[in-house]
Length: 173
Image (cartoon, rainbow, N blue to C red):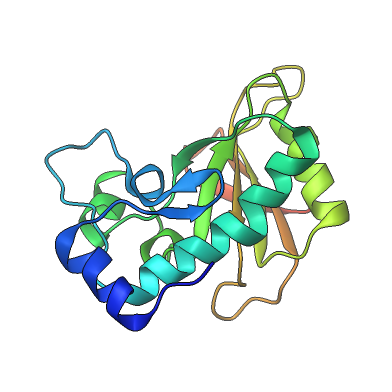
């Protein structure tokens, strides 16, 4: 399913919720608890990028596990990205990345399956604790971030000494 340029323009200007794929809507991909921030995409390209994430990433993972996916974060406008302390180069701001979880499935297991079975830009297991299956979340992008190669796999952890996020190469589960 793809939208015409006119349809995309209409979606952006009229703030129309549409299905981006069989199981994921635009509203779901732009939802935020920060209601003071208008997180609606202002560019048609962002809607297209979100649709690509839904079709190529989320639908594939949903089909594998046959369970609903909870999207924690899809698109983030720059103001929202700043509010949640996202990276200044976050792919969420272009609609190219999504953070998600599946109830009852360990996030480490989801990442391992994606790593072994899918094509992706970047995969990050974020703040996962071994033995706590629902800890952390999965971050995945449909295209690689600028300056990175496709298929990059990382694990995000908090540095105990500094409290800052460190990205370790590979999957640490």
